[in-house]
Image 1 (tube, helix red, strand yellow):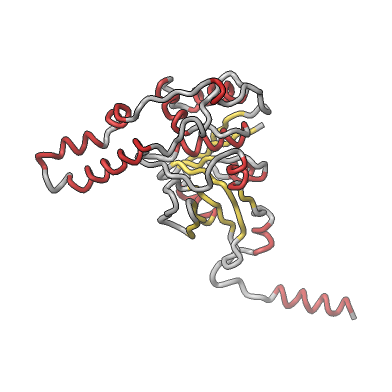
Image 2 (cartoon, rainbow, N blue to C red; image 1 turned 45 degrees about the vertical axis):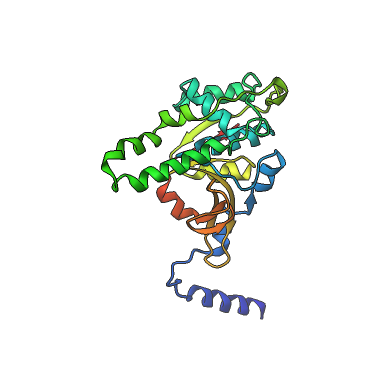
Length: 263
């Protein structure tokens, strides 16, 4: 009797038509999409769950400092990081890998976020100036050069006040586990990092930190939680304060490379 029921069920399943909306098999998608949310871990090391990059043109310093903060267990100042990278002309992957090794070994000691706040007044002021420049560029050609000046990196560097931090306000010198900064073309490194509790960085139209993952109950698809650094507002996807959810397959189309910390 049981065998007969199983055979009938097998025939029924085999004859079920394919979903016309192309929704993936829920169970199969779930195997690679266990729920992860790194926002509590970021809060535990001293970083706010919602952050605002202000006048910065990209998210890189915020995303990268959060990657390092989780790896070190202490909050790295994004403002300190962007100045240090510029002062030492660190731009390529190899140079950044060297800096990360020094940081994890305790030889490079950034300022703590609590000592050098990243969401500073100067950044907010620069953001307003850039918006003003964009709004007036076509209205008054005679002043266009002036408004363009406000939007330059040189003006930003000259306008942001200097800062410093004492030894007691720096990341500890205690070495952490050995990790290597790795660059890959695909997004598999995102899932690998999330499973290990590490924060990956994806490069698309902006630089994004991917801080979570979930399986959507409505679509049956895997979604990533992407941090925006736009304060409590977000302008795309399924919004939460300071972040948005985007389907993994959709995110894959826009990502050009991924940075992750690998053992």
